[in-house]
Length: 199
Image 1 (tube, helix red, strand yellow):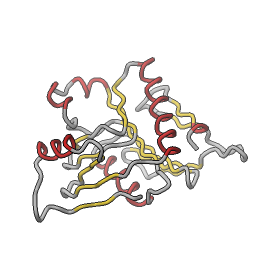
Image 2 (cartoon, rainbow, N blue to C red):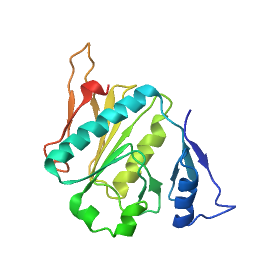
Image 3 (cartoon, rainbow, N blue to C red):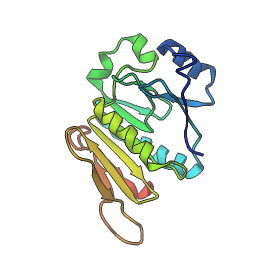
Image 4 (cartoon, rainbow, N blue to C red):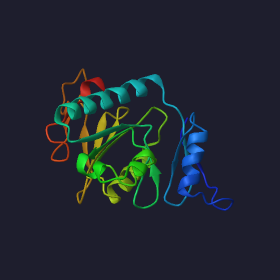
């Protein structure tokens, strides 16, 4: 199943509080909201995607536990981006100073910021273009580093501030091609994602 977009703006213009309450009232439905106010209903993922996403979050969290440089979030966390959109990356990280600058009330709701780092993992049912648009939106809203991991095409699109998108091929078990890892660069110093358990 692919994500479904609902444009209800002609009927109702949800406030942030109403959108938050809608999400809480329907915890079994993953919702996002575009900057234009359209609701995006995200279907649950299959087993392979869920396993891959768990591996990404595990590696990111393990690195962060050693370095204590920020906060790691899973795909259940919504962020209120500067453009007004409410988005939930598959994995994300926020620098500790930025997280601590938020009030306790802001931390309880959708944090009003763009993460420093995001990952989107393409599932078998995902169309690539909406994910690319989402990655561009993240970058436009201040995300410093983003990875769009596409196991179907064995590639990763890397999004950086002020640079063109870089496309790299993932290591295939039978073909020993590079890279088999991704670097967190200066955003996540010392973090290296091992792609062998993800592709």
